[in-house]
Length: 277
Ligand SMILES: [Zn+2]
Picture 1: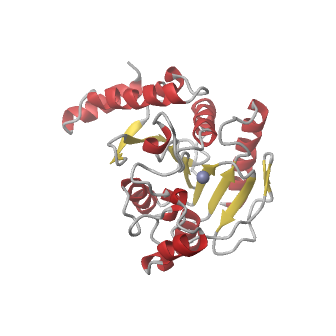
Picture 2: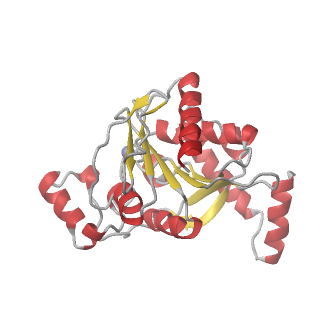
């Protein structure tokens, strides 16, 4: 048993939690590895992610991996990294696993990371994966922005997308458990930057009160600011809360970037964080 698991078990003895935690996490890892050709069970399980305490509509635990500050070094800031907001963007889930393994080897305490590689397990892990969650909601339109509180997300959906089912913002802001998790995560963790991974538009987007620090290029992705939408994460965290949001749009939803590209994306991300936090 690793030291990490031993520590959790000792904690569990005090707080009515059992080794079922591991069973649950491993069950999610099994589903993930069954679905994603580029993530093996071992590669998921060995990370020893923990259940966040939040679950999807269908009851799948939303998992978290934390790389906390280290004693010997003052962390420069807190970074929240989220993959798999849209369940049909499988590469945007797999690449986060690759980066977690980079951190497994090289976490130096430079930043305090909290990572959820799969925000929308219901959309991703079913046989026919889908963009929306199990309630048919586009999670990236379900956040509580000042405009969406007045029904702008629903109006935008009806008028601008002609009621496109893939972009349904939900009946009201934060109606979904998955967005509630991220909302609470931002409130409690207080990230300095949020990084969200998507596909397939092949660009890097940036939402913040000022866009002058927007990354011009991250790896093979170039800056292309897409604007904000009612109820989107960029609008909520980047504009409303003032927490910069970097959105990476990989070129393909179902094809992984090369190992070299994966590594370059990571290096450029960290370089941008060092310069801007
Ligand atoms: Zn997406």
